[in-house]
Length: 125
Image (tube, rainbow, N blue to C red; front, side, top):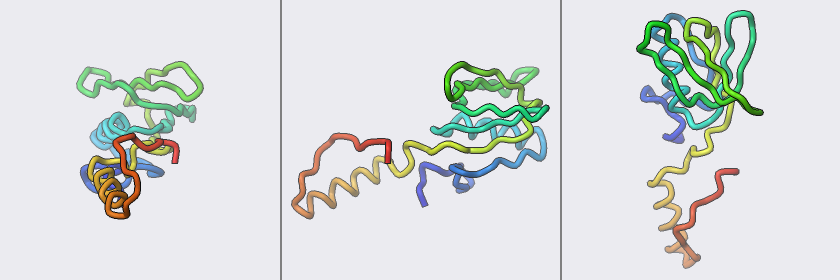
């Protein structure tokens, strides 16, 4: 299990679909989308879908909203009340790339006598 893909509850986000049974669940799903490092797909009333990165939100104001950088350019403001579906559709580029994982790989290379350095790995696996 890759810890960087999980919510506090332990649920893996990448590839999952949020349960939006009520306003509390919808708010938690948007918070998780904000914390997620990959793209999400949000479906709103009327069936329109937006795919991109949730980079801001305000769940405490009178009419809670989220802002997305859309895949392909532009941005979209979405009201929580309009969200009918939310899927963690994009790859989490930092999955498995924790400090602990890096230390383990570094130590394994050193023990094998291989060159181990502090350079980061590509996020494009």
